Image (cartoon, rainbow over all chains, first blue to last red):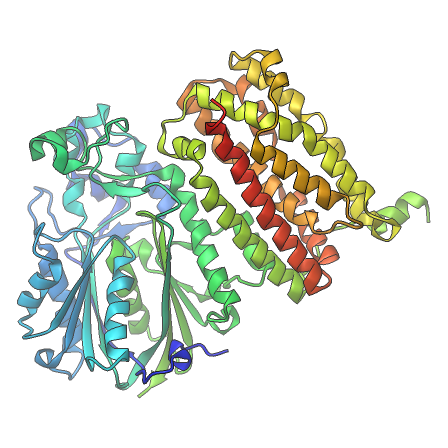
Length: 383
Length: 240
């Protein structure tokens, strides 16, 4: 069975290669004990949930683009530009010749215009075709896929994908205090405070291989927003009987006081993301797109310990399990940087030099926002 | 060798590895389950449970609508067991044990309803809703076929739901409605999908799915039962 979508299309379709990667993490690594010193104690009291949540996610260090006085040390744009420059510096391709700029972030520095416009200006790239993908973690894969498709059909010969996240500004103690402090916040509104952090990644895509690089075999995603309620969000108030969203309030201050600007995770629904991640993989196996036995490295935005117990046993029994030694993640040391995670992860994976020519890499990005799971297969090639 | 020892030698146990067809069937069944969960999540009463607007009244209506099917549950399982011939005695043993385990479940459900403040006479008088009628009719029809291996698909869905009720619904209902543990014994009781249970299930997959046709029957039955079960729960909102 062909592992490349290119083989299935009738028209002329180009191969696409990731020829360079870059990543940027702001400031020093912040360990678990330092987190609350940076983010601040809500109402002056240490969190009672922090250690429990950190124990569950296993993250040991992360990076923040804010300092202990809550000053922003790097804007989201700064992070994006730094990662993009690192990616471009490693390639002989001049930035001015790149045809497309495809960006993603959960939340830019500005509400409008699109984040891509700001990144383009920051990188001084003239006349690019521009895309800003909107969403959460899987918006990265949307941005990559749009760029890959533009190259596949021959509209461009190169594209730069830049994905950047600056979540820490949402986690300042003052945000929670403005929404009512400890009395108003619950597990769901505190959960992501101990989960997400800042960083950016960039990939350069070209329609011809260049040295040792990665061919993009296929990218697929399956969204289930029709089936489930929102699971990760900003925009609804603490009172779940109130159907207003943040802009329905007379002032932004009123929205903030109602908790409508807090970032929340419906932790009870979170188990669905593991099941849907498995569901998508099974779909790809059954349609012949994914051959699990051929995968040499598995880069997952989710930690392996979520795939344990009964579901791990079932994956094993049905022949869809990827052995633990093939898993690669830097989540525990670089933090969960949302959409940027998979780009940062691949960058570090390649720098470690584990990938050998001919090997296949499966990337998986599950997004809990309203349940989108994305998959991408890459093959290491020698240009 | 005694008769008992012989029987245990033929007992259905966890295979070291499933056959290729068994693996494929398990993958298909897993996808049917995930599809069922998605379908379930759009059923109004389940959506209220997920978004947190589920009330004690919802819970009473849920129990009222579940009972008729639970009462009939033991009938299709018993019928299913008796439809397996001597060549399939090992499967029949598994099903019979299962039927014995569950045939008085509805009494627990009735007591839960009473504990929520409902009247015993009311829940006993509740007829099947249209979804329950269709589900029961389908299960009895399948169970009446000779060697109804396809019903493994029905067990997959119904037992999976039992586990979901226990692990996912019971505590949620308690926290949203203020009902105490006395009111959710039926839901919690079904969380018996333990390792031994899964081992039996893997064994049954290999035992039953010996041809593409048999495997298709299992998967199709799972799909039909999932849809009919979702319909049964949709009717909770029609029975006000």
